[in-house]
Length: 169
Image (cartoon, rainbow, N blue to C red):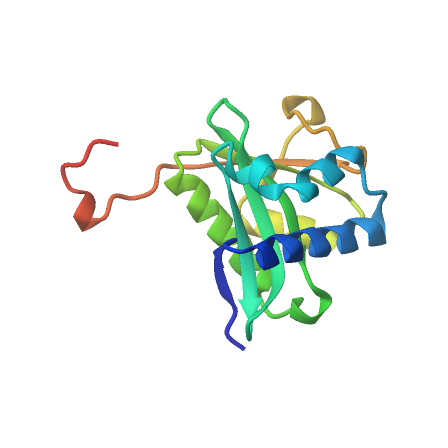
């Protein structure tokens, strides 16, 4: 099972992003107005402000996604991470999360933050395993009513590659 993680490219990818998120949010919580706005136009919500949406694809089918978006302070929010039930337990979530962390570094993020829920134990455990640490609610701007877990990961700059030698960042 080879799962490819790549940037969102097509209208079909955007539709999969919307569908996957509506499914998981609707299964556990109430879809909030902010969710509807973000999912109606993910390019405007995440990419145009300088973020990224990544998708996990298996055999040509998008079965996972995650978004990162800058908050204007150097930090990026990790948002809308979803993995279809058939890909859970196969490393898709970890691959998406690691790719999002790497991409945030490439974009110059100083940290990543997220809001999750105590009801999403597997997700919270994955965030902890990758290096996110619990922080007080008031330390983050998190507008979702469903959020009861607040986490942050400090980031170091992406390492320079041989091709970057002498290039100012």
